[in-house]
Length: 449
Image (cartoon, rainbow, N blue to C red; front, side, top):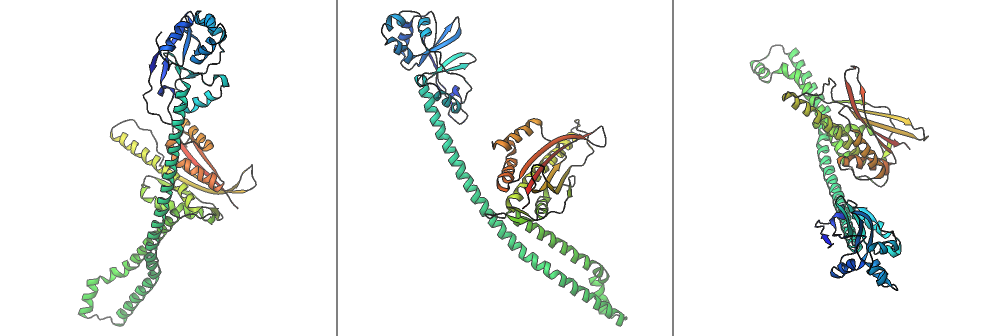
C-alpha cells in the first residue's frame, strides 16, 4: 500500500495532457483501517489523497485534507482512525472530479475551478488504462499558468512574426513595384516608337521600290549590296520582325502591369477594379507553370468595376489557381511515373483543365447584386474528410495546416470584402459512362455597390 509517484518528464506545451504531470498511485481497500492510511500520509507528506477500491474496483477517493478534517471532529479518532475506511467513505461527500489521462491541462484546470468551494483543494482522479491515479491540484494550477505563459509568449512571437512578415511583404511590394516601373518605362518607349519605326521602314522600302522602277539597270555596286543584304528576304521579313517586337513589348507590358497589381499596397478604402484584368494578370504571372498539358478555359461575362482591395484579391486568385495547378501537375507526374514503372494508372482521356467563369447574379436571401467568380479544376478532387475540415475551418476560424492559403483567402473575401467563399468537390460522370470526372470548384461572391 505504499504510494508510487510517476513523474511526467515531458516538457510542457500548448497540447500537454495530464500525463505530463506528476501522478500519485496510492490505493487502499475499504477494509483497511483509517490509521494505516494516516500513517502513510505521515511518512509521505506530498501524497494528496488515497484511491478507495473494493475487490480491485474503484469506489471513490478521500483526500488528505478530508481525513484530517474528520479526525479533528469530536470522537473523530475513535470513529474514523481505528475503524475501516468504509466508515469514513460513507461520511465523505461523493464530489471527486475524474478526468481521462489524455485530457489537456488547459481544459482540466477550468473544470477543477468550477467545483464547489469546499472541494477546490481536493486532488483530481486521473483515469488511465492501467488504473487510477491522483493529481495534486497545486501541480495542475502551476502547470496551467506555465502553459498560459507559453501561450502568451507564442502569441507575442506570432504577432511579431506577422508584423515583420507584413513589413517585409510591404517592402518587397514597394521594391517589386519600383522594378516593374523601371521596366515599364523602356517598354513604353519601345512600344511608343514601334509605330514610327514601322512607318519609317515602310517608307524606305517604298522609296527603294520607286528607285528600282526608275533605274531598271542596276550598277554592279547596287547589285552587290542587294545580294549582301538579301533585299527580297528583307522586304518580306522586316514587317514580321516589327510585329514580333510589338507582340513581345505588349506581353511584357501586360506582365509588368500584372506584377504591379499583385504587389499593389491596398489603401484604407476599396477602389473599383476590373476583375478580368486582375485574373488575366495572375494567369500571365503563372504562365511558366502552365504546361502544354494543362488547358485554361475562360468564360467571362460583362462585369462592372467591382469595389475591392485589388492587391489582396490578387493574392486570393493566386492562391486558388496555384493550388489547382499543383493538383493537376502532381496528378500528371504521378500518372507518367506509373506509366514508366508499368503500374496500373487511372484511366482518363480528359485533358487537365482549369476553368474560370465570371457572372453577375442575385442571391435569394439578398436583393444586392453579386459578382460570382468560379475557378474549378478537373483534378482528383478533395476527400470528404478534407472538405469537412476545410468547411469547419472557414466557419470557426480555426487553423487547418493543410490548406493555410485557402483559409487566408476565405478571411480576405469574407472579413475584408464582405463576400462569400465556397468550396465544392464532387464527382460526376462524363460523356463516356465508363469514366468519371472529379471536379473541385471555388466560388467567390463579391457584392457590387
